[in-house]
Image 1 (cartoon, rainbow, N blue to C red):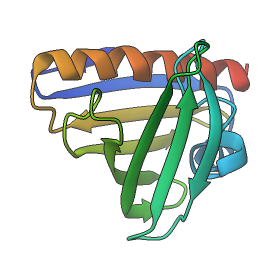
Image 2 (spheres, helix red, strand yellow):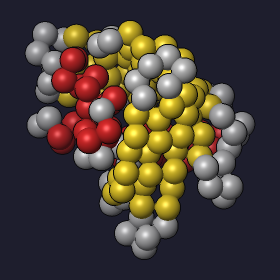
Image 3 (cartoon, rainbow, N blue to C red):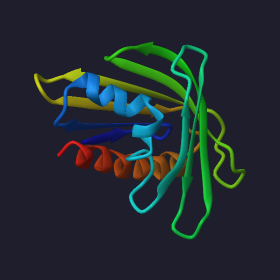
Length: 146
């Protein structure tokens, strides 16, 4: 399910794992490498300092070898229920400025509803591009626990 406005998007997905497991998949570098890029794109490296004020870096690589680096700072960590962090692309051609990602992990008794809100986009086009990317990433994390 997805709803959005011109400057924010909200996507939810249910995965077949408890929320602590899903939270770890979202916050541990080795697990991010398995899903934190759109389908067809690999995560070449990931680094996580899971502290408020700590930074993360996700280095994605397209099949053609093109690099895409997402970086940001954790603003809120409420394990295993919620994460809030900034999001920005290092490459100038993708940069839309600093945006904000909030992820809620809702316990459904053995499965987890992920509710992702990504906001502060400067344009509807930037929001749309990120919606496609996040939808693809959520497909991958759902498959990881299928």
